[in-house]
Image (cartoon, rainbow, N blue to C red):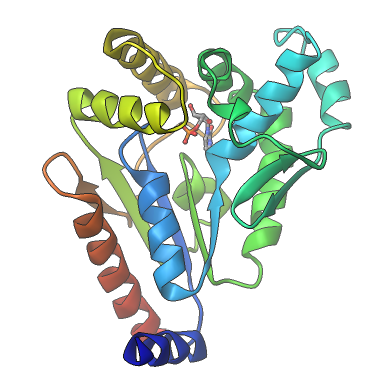
Length: 234
Ligand code: DC
């Protein structure tokens, strides 16, 4: 216990870096990023949660997502904060609501809107100014932090992604059939990787990790090891 504490202190003394974790939905990005951040004493930011919170806001207001001027007006009233790894939308905890099926079905369309991306990316870059951040998303290594010291791109086979997402949802009390989860993941993969603004793609200097046959613990250990290499280099 004491040793682990000393190791954390030592890491905290070292120069901090930015770790960008990108990839398709449900490849284990957020779970890995959260654990890596905790082991390094870094801040974890789930950038997908931010796009989900904007989507929730628009849905709750009955906004027409296709009316871009209307979306821009609404955006002026959206404020997103992270407190103790929970996400707050205008001061209210929305951890659960942002995982709903309705949000899942609309978030890719909302996150393809440039005005939405501009606002989110600005906030994400501000959070990263002091380094010591692990952020996961789709454009973190390509657009948000193109100079991130460590970039990881996670992949996994579709079926395993759907099973993992189903388990994650069920821990939150949300039951969804595998087929509909798979369909949603396929639809989102397509929209996320073909949109005009900041499409999902692997940064040239990213390290790819296929998580199909490895456990969460193995993913975390791999990323922490890569991070320590980069921290020692910097
Ligand atoms: O990581 P996630 O599944 O919670 O992300 C939800 C959606 O948000 C995803 O389908 C695409 C979008 N997103 C994005 O466009 N850019 C990011 N950096 C993170 C997420």
